[in-house]
Amino acid sequence: MKAVSMRQPRVVEIEEIPEPKIGPEDLLVELRYVGLCGSDLSAYRGLSTMVTYPRIPGHEASGIVLAKGENVPKSMQVGSAVTIMPYTSCGFCPSCQLGRFNACQHNQTLGVQRDGALAERISVPFDKVYSSKILTLQELALVEPLSVGYHATNRGNVTESDTVLVLGCGTIGLGVVAAASHKGASVIAVDIESKKLEMASRLGAKHTIDPKREDISAKIRDLTNGEGVSVAIEAVGLPQTFRMAIEQVAFSGRVVFIGYAKEDAALQTNLIVSKELDVLGSRNSLNTFPKVIRMLEEQKLPFDEMISCVIPFRESAKAFAEWDASPQRFTKILIELPSSDSHSINR
Image (cartoon, rainbow, N blue to C red; front, side, top):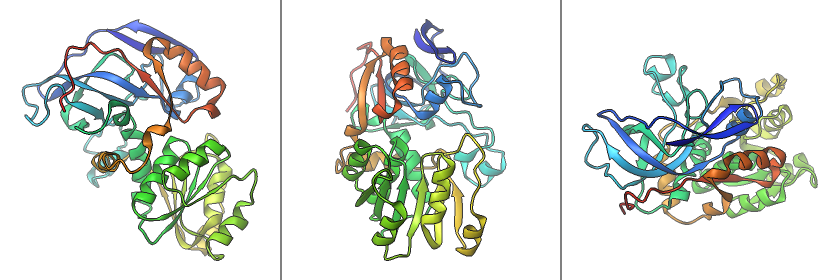
């Protein structure tokens, strides 16, 4: 079968690889859409410390179940439209012992530490697969990145009484916006791209701020009666946005970092201590796939508008090159894989 191989930084080719084999608890999934993530771009640029080459990228995937192992529950039917949770967990490390499998010390994410989903077919354990009879295959490909944002709001204990500042409105940040607004919080979204701020508004942000045009501190003081936000969630990964989150959050507030800087970042420990802030990291997602699927199934928000373009599988190398050259043009790129038409979708 065919797969996209990142042979080395900025070298992407389509190659033939062996067909996957399924065990008794596995599903064989024919991939239909794979979303490109910031981690894929980092790997393409040679900036990821977690990726070795060659590597098949891709961890935001949807597809159709083609076959199932003998021990797979009857509820998971051949022909089901599914999305895949791309993480592993060892079950023995400190995080796993606490039930926080998303932060497993030995996690291997598809397309990062192990070969990913940008291939015609993949074998995955059935407990890593979630189905929907309502969502389209394109919508199912959005579940994983949206779940990362949803998990960050869980880490920040976001409720309807909160005012949430979201720094960065890429796909992950937009997932935070959608999840926080879905929980009833008042959301302030910040980005330097007007199109991303427009999308944030459509996904529930009550206020938007472009720091190129407005003073963030003054605007937030005005919107919060001078108190600051109760929760700040950073989804950019720059030292200045880390500091901004700590500066703009209220006393006894919560700060959640999803992005991570590619360089050391100095934080204002005086503010962390004097405000008695809860400063939290957020990694991957934990038990959020079903919640995100339900949120999508409600059809209340235009999540499909997050998709910037759909690129044919055969043009994957071109997609990476164009994204690398102009990352600001894209919110979410989906790669569309060809259908074998061997199974109809089971709705």
